Image (cartoon, rainbow, N blue to C red):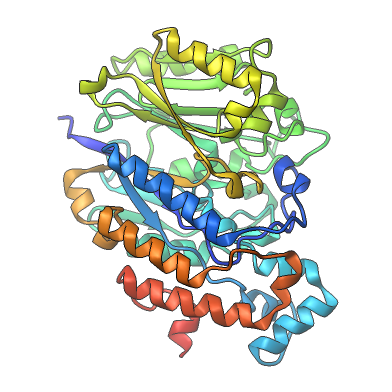
Length: 453
């Protein structure tokens, strides 16, 4: 029997050390904006404004806290000694690139936090989470321990939620989380098709990019499908097109997004794309649902424009039946600034197809580091009972939004240059802010510095 379920989006709250250190090779925006002065306060407020707006539209909207940065623990594992301030000063003096990694606020992009399978798909009828190891990039490879702690705090009921540790951080098991995973379905509470997209197969010869690395492996995607207890017929694996990776499509969610029975993708998203789409249609038809594919050709939007605007890194959200149904697309304002992209979007909505509305948001601070609306959120399909079992203080409402906005305005700097990461006072500022945040959201001693006190 199909149970009623809804899709919830849990956005990452931007942390106080949001900066442009240019740490992510293969991410064009990150490289192009390296060493600019960032505005952490504005970044966090922009993210909160998007969360509040979607909550006001009736979507289930949650929030996940930032990780502790600077990470003195990372620097200590790399050989720096002394008290915390000395560790930061020595790292800044002798290895500023390592200090940059230790200060990264990239955990804000919770699409990379984990892969999630809803209870309708899993063998044991629980929602399954596997934290991503993110082993391809130093500034993210040490996130997963805290990510697991956050997810276990947010979804604590072991009868309803199953949590898996990150896969081993071996190159052959590189896992980038939900940024390379899409679930397609009829109703959310029905059994769906889980679509895993990988960049490389480490155990076989396959097409490969030449300019930028392929981060997600087939082996990691297969392991997660097994851990989550997914049936063979519920899973489809496909390879990212290597030319897209070389154009800056470092994750699949920069070139494709799906929701419900709709897949919105570029015509150069996948290797052997016609066969991939045929398989998805066949699997969806077996569940009694027709897959609607909105495939954008290069003549309409080039890959360069897709990467520059983050057209496909948009949130594809189901609309209420009272509004006429179909899907809404949440896009960054950069889509309006690229004439070819905006022209395409206007024609798309006017066409009467499955995507019928647009919502435009200013996420400039996130976009400059290569993260759009879809990067900022982790999707979790929940039944009513499962939602009731989540941590209640993590849902956005008027009260929570007001409290978080006031908290950001008090604690965050409005300017942060890469050189400012060497300021030991930044560590004290961040710990003070996070300590108050855990009280605000009733998270307990979430961070290592709290448990060590």
